[in-house]
Amino acid sequence: MTGLLSALLALGAGVLALPALALLVLTLAAGRRPPGPVEAGSGAAGSAPGLPARPRVAVLVPAHNESRHVLPTIACLRPQLGPRDRLLVVADNCSDDTAALAREAGATVVERFDASLRGKGYALAFGVDALRADPPDVVFVIDADCVLSEGAIARVAPECAAAGRPVQMLNLMHAAPGAGVRHRVLEFAMVMKNLVRPLGSFRLGGACHLMGTGMALPWSLMSTARLATGHIAEDMKLGVELAVAGHPARFSLGGEVSSAFPDDSGTARTQKSRWEHGHLAILTEELPRVLGLAWRTRRPALAVMALDLMIPPLALYGLVLGAAVALSLLGAWLWPGLVPAAQVLLLGLAATVLAVGLGWWRYGRHLLRARELLSTPLYALWKLPVYVAYALQRRSGWVRTRRKDE
Image (tube, rainbow, N blue to C red; front, side, top):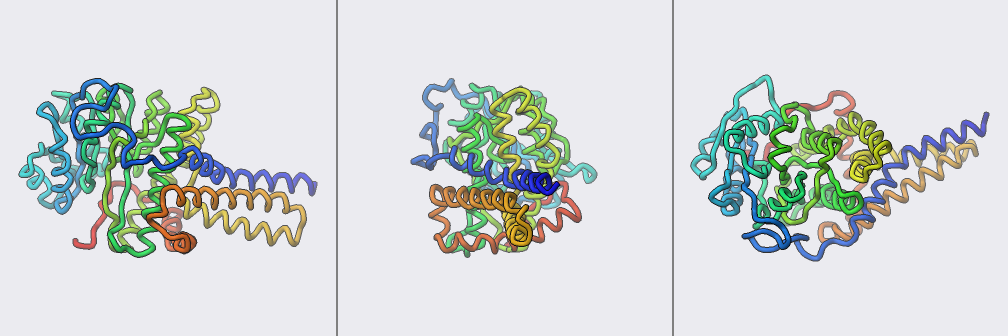
């Protein structure tokens, strides 16, 4: 009986250590950082070598009270569009002058007012409906507080059209120059989540999750996608549904969409709360289905998406794994039957530390010094209220991030 209990505890420890193994596998698969800011194509005009002529493009910009940030977004997009392309701003439940400013800047604007159905997915569905009378070949989605790198549309649009699959560009947020350690830790955490992991999953299995901004979809998929769900993580949910249907997203370093972290720590916590509540919701809702399909169909794309999906927010995982290691070591000192479980958990902790260390060495040394990297457990404690809030009351809907200057 004692041996059976010890084996069951070791098995449970193995389940808890699985996300650490997944993180290490994806980090190793990501390999070295590409030598330049983009991996494919160059120049702001024409198409990338070997790809067909540039398809007709529509850029959807969902905006909820973004009057302070929509103009830089429009300014970076307009020079990248040709005479056959469209720039459509969806002013969703706006109470400010977002719509008027976007029109003055040269964008086509549609306005949506529905207080009962709130969320980015509803705004995207409204924008797609506005495009149906004269549909494009490829639809880009760029959030209204983001800036797209020069030439990105010219490089990514032909890739999307040729593959007939969604394409997710690199999506990063940047701390202000001279920012403190906490904001640079946040930036490194986003590098791990939005660069290292999708790059590893794409190189390993040819797929990645969608991130909500900086994504391009063929019209045939965008026009039939189930967008108006109101889900807090509508982007990840859409990516999972498309992958299950046989259209997994590609990851492209042919362009980068970027934005700035909020300066205020309370606002940053609210933003992270929304992201991570959505991540946890998709993990619990979709992971069993994706794992089951990956096992039955042997599709590498679903396997790598499940691998990435099983990784909880790293701060939460680090807290749970660290506590489990400490308790198992204490328990093993009192009862030798816990030794196998403690060993498995220690291996999981070592794999997590190795993955984060490799990610930092390859992609994050410009953000954090080695001694600053050691402060990341304090960052995990700073985020503890986010996870308590998830346990007590999950977030839903579209909650716009407030900035310090508002």
